[in-house]
Amino acid sequence: MQPTIDSLSLIDIGESVSVSCNISQGCFGLGTSSGKLLVYDGNSMLSCTELNSQISGIVTIGETLIAATTTNGLHAFSDSQLWTLEIESGCELISASDDYLLVTDGSEGVIRVQSDGKVRNREIIGEITDLKCSEFDDLTAISLANGTLIIIDNNGQIIHESTPPEDDAEKISCMAFRDGGILLVSRESLGMTLDDRFEDRIECWHPILGLIHTIELPSRATTILPTELGAMVGCIDGRLLSLEVGNNQIDELIKFDYSISNILECGKDFLVSTWFQIYRVTRGGEVLWSFEHSGFVTQMFSLDDGIVVVIGESPEGSNPAPVVLLDPDSIPHLPEDAKFDFEEIRRASSDFAGDLSQEEIALADAPPMAISETDDLMNALEEDLEIITEEPVVEVDLLEDLSSSARAINLPPIADAGEDRTVSADEDNTAIVLLDGSSSYDPDGTIESWAWQNEMDKVIGHTPQIKVKLLSGVHTFKLQVTDNRGASTTSMVTIRIQ
Image (cartoon, rainbow, N blue to C red; front, top):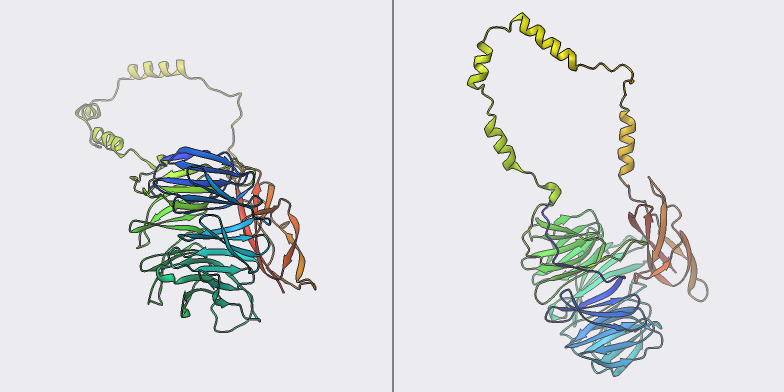
């Protein structure tokens, strides 16, 4: 059993945390689905601001904290509120550099906003799935639902654009900037065309030279952490991979049972979140400790003082999971149920070494007990002996015991979001698609709840089957099912509209 560490603090928010960010000097911000903007210093809440709309993102520019909402625009705060900016179609994604921020709205536009709240420009780009600003190089990477990659400069001009081939469908799963403006992009080919393109790959894009390198991956990447030597890549099948600049070799450090959601640097090691667990992993692939969160870990980041904030999402119908603060340098220990008192065993073995004592030897050498003494002993035993004849002999049904034990163990439900499909679009480049999760089942109980989520992790339905209207492109949906005893699993389905 792996060692674990204790949490520094558990912060009960009372609702789901949708977004978060590090601020400075040990402070961090949280945004909730109900519209609360919370600022904490450690486990002490400094402020709570009601924005009356779900918070879709929070970022910092210098000492300014900026929150984006789905229906109520942008709000900037320092010691007090600095400015607001109304965005009619709502904010979906937000990313910031050192002096400006980019926001995607509900009308497929990208808005460039200065740190003082003034809008510089707005461009119609398309259905955007991800947005990343480089902190120091004035570059922005944009991924579209149809698999297109766009890199723009500080003036909003497109400097590189990469579209999928017409005979294929692709998806960009994650992006990250390295120093020097090098962009790492995880791409997945969804089509059946056989060519020289890798099905799963990392592309390296130079701000001037464009695509400079491609590395094949054994599985789809779910998160990328740029490092001094290259990058760490977490995969959907639980692999943790190490990539080095100038080396085409990929080192697999370790493989977990579930998809990796976050990777952080922790000194010379890494913190990796997968499912409900956080692991500290060395560069050699050794697990130093693990910590179990009460929710599915969705967000994880380090504060300036080294404390790690971990945010988890509880299964549908469960109480919201608390925000956990961890000191990754805490001394690991074995869980309570894994401890064993070897000292007590040693004390017992020293008292009974196995040899006969002098009294035992003398009794063994003594003559047999006299007959009269034996009769007295038997009479004494008969006085205390009670023969029970009324109660029947109880037979143990081993199969029934095994069945009872099996019922005590809750098997998780089996989520089935259906097969990946390609659907023809109508004249308006849209199609209505039925998402069918009715094949999901629970082997030892019943499914109590269904939750369909889109690529933005927004819940769009709570029934086994839902209909969605989709634009041309590639769309991914996640189905989470929860059984009557609180266990849950997820399944993914990809729909291509052409």
